Image (cartoon, rainbow, N blue to C red; front, side, top):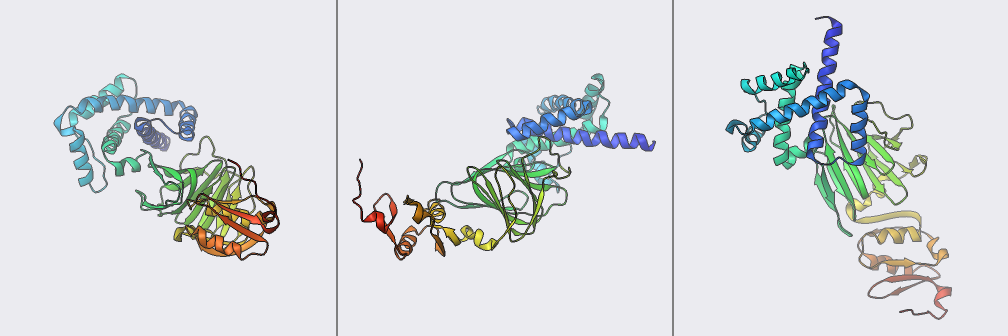
Length: 369
């Protein structure tokens, strides 16, 4: 075989594997908007991509017909998958392979090796439908969320650990090419398990983060995303390219962010800020740590956790700079601290805590119903 033919065959086999991965993801359910855009871009990239994807669909029909055979029932495949060391079931039945290959050749698609590989991949996809662990590994999305005041720790299928803060939600989708986590709302910290062949990517609004073997925090707010690196290095960039395939180079606007640095991405990418990263993620220990913060910002942070909201309407009081470390769920202790500040008055009711200036407190309060 000439080097040129060998190269072409390797390229076709690589495309066949990509096509199988996309087929599995499409069979799992409707794609997210960003993932759907990536899929369409992949199809448009080459006629070969379309050919191989349609070939996967033809193989799937043969596999569905084979499922009537007792040897290939889902529960049997699942049992074999968990017994195999690499969790891959190879369908070696000669009759099935001849049927698949013959069908492909009749359609003018001369790709016997790709067909054989597709049978294996689709068998794994079949087990994934009935196995949550394998489903996450091969593309079935999984959503993790918390309500107001709740925190959660979750180990992901690859061994990475997800820490989810109050009122937050992420959607995890793994494939053979990459591991992707979409931060739908709120805040999450990731302790990433190293994998040489699959990158770990986070998408949060208009921000993208790629990391390998690191620990970092992503806080998605209404108009911006804040990324804090606790350990290791991440690449941060604004916007998610419509086609960002595994192994592709990072976007030109990507900025490398090291441990102890924080960056905010809004309409523009902010400059890296040096800070105490451990203090920035004090929420992992149910704490709020702040140094020279505006009182209004600290009150908003407490309101993420406690059942009784803090209200600070006076702009001068909101601008006061304060420092401290408090239990995130102990609003009463923070209110007691505020009462020690000059010119500050705290009013408590069963439903709210109002922080007022001493001057405004001397004026008659208007009660509205």
